[in-house]
Length: 493
Image (cartoon, rainbow, N blue to C red):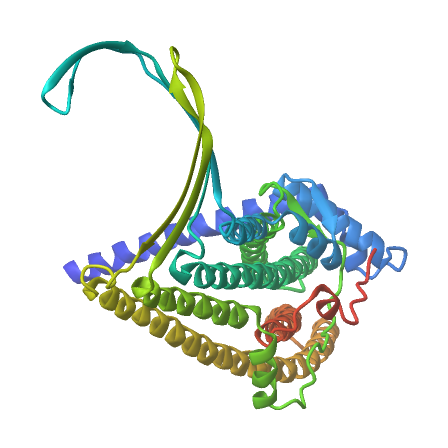
């Protein structure tokens, strides 16, 4: 008896929950049907030839912009590259670092010049003073000294030449790093742009799918009202419409985040809703697929700016290590003073002095400080060499990944094109068969889902291929605005 009561209670709950869900879907479908944004596109869905692709695109853009509550800032890939290379903050930071290295290197050249100085001293002496520490005498005198001097430490035990080489290599390293940063920003700009373009095209597919679902719901409801369909078909159409709305909302959010990422890379206001003019994407081959991976790696070893930066950095640390050997070289300092000395009472008299100071050293801290510093600097040089080896290994792996990502994307594109063509034919046939009573609404739903999936897959695979080609261009060190924009012919409104 208790078991029967429990089963009855569960059944009542299920019926109640099912009723609530059905009530929500009915309400949602009614809301969609009354929305003017859906009605404005119904003619296109019905195949009205009076609506061109441009008008279709304008309708979609307007509705998506309103739903995001952000007016679009239209652009294309070429314009994004120009803005990023001019305004990106990482490039500006890297350029400031290069500028610092530039002036440090200039400072190193001027360290070969002597130091010049002027010294003036006046005192008021009064009272008793001991002469020779024995005889006390009382005086009141005002001694005065006016001296102009020059002091030159020659080449600072030879450290000057090593310091000059060190700063020169650090300047090279920072210059190469600046170029590498530009390459990175160029890559990130292209990748971010393709993310936005991909999201734009995907969300348009989702938007059209929403209109399709609404038209299907209207058609199914009309069949049910005429006694030709079932209530199940109507509820299923309502559920498919609600699911399509969920997918659309999720993609809409992803689009907004992609726009913020692109705006940040461009160096403009992050809230700017950057939006591509393009309404189609074509696969563009930037690297010949017939080139061997080893050949691509050899190109990278010669062209990559980060490799050049690391090699220059290693040379700078080598110069720093070598400068320690000069600790045992005598330090020579020459100075010259010319001026006047005297007192207020006796007057001023010429004073000249030339000094040569030579100091021989056994190195720092009884040579032990010099030896340990050489070993420490040698460890740093070894570390930088290992970093260079590791960098080259990672570059080769990146080339391998980008190379095969490109090959795989090409195969996916070919398969996706067949999938799209088949899905479109399948949907047309299922609609015709359902009208003829030879297919069910479930067949139409399945065909519609296949069509949406096929179109989104084609978009993603196109974007994936272009991103992989750009990444490969970056990996081998040949990325540039000209190479990135090769055969770039965007289809505008």
